[in-house]
Image (cartoon, rainbow, N blue to C red; front, side, top):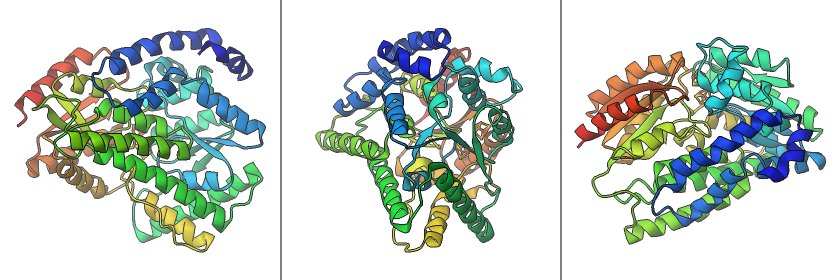
Length: 423
Ligand code: SF4
Ligand code: SF4
């Protein structure tokens, strides 16, 4: 990635510290990813993206900025990409998934903040991630308390817009979210200088729906007995979907899905027979958080599905494409986005139903409910998740972890023991 040094300098990055990150990432990726056998050829695209992770897409974004486009950085699957795209803007996910950025976040946040928030703030303030430098505007949301307070700190350093998310899912909440989306659309119009029209928003809705459908095809491929792709590889595809161009993302996912469908027909599995099928549920896994998938898939398990924001919540449910007014479109967007089931909502029974449904659809042997340390919301909801799964007769293991490797051996022992008793 050395070709990009001038670009990183122009972005005002701390090059010495950034070099340290560039040194460790290839080894980590090699150990976790390239050590796998018989991977689908289609994964070559995502391997390439990782090899150039701080180079190729940032360079594209900068080029787009030179042509007058604005880049919006987001942190949550409730923020509607469609609105930004309709104004000829670009969305890039900004959630931090590496321990590398956590100490930077701890300089300004309590240690008892979840690692995802600390890493996201650290990546910005330490100037060690090009995506955090490039984004012209950050878009936050009022999901959890940690994020709400973190936005106030980030707002001292970068233009920040906050969407006020409802905490319940009544009719008036869906209407309120539609109004929030409309208000966001006005901000996006002012910031980009581009008007959002019914036609442009409809086109953007179709673009993101196509991306969702393509991602769903990849996930569907692991519903049967043959498992043509590892959970690790599918996770990588999902993580990169948050910051890739949506049309290219759909093309690459469809290409991968074609290959997976063929593998299923040919009986090509990446796991030996008898490998236990695991559904992961819980807090999101931002790139490069591959820790749990790696432990599970080197302990006799295969992650066949994730009920997470870096999983089914990102692509399930399409936005209605038939609306003919902006008002109708904002409402349609709200209806789709409010089907996401984040633990910040009360009650959040839709998530419990989803977990049980997905466990059956993907024919899993067991569920692992993972919580990022200090995420009070998902931690508390774990009680209900585990109770519902036990009632449904589905084995479940609840675990809590962070981005460090200090608990890796302990997790390996617990997960190994859980997998051993399955089936
Ligand atoms: S877990 Fe909740 S707050 Fe986090 S990305 Fe998902 S929806 Fe947003
Ligand atoms: S994992 Fe939990 S604490 Fe962390 S950002 Fe998401 S909802 Fe907030």
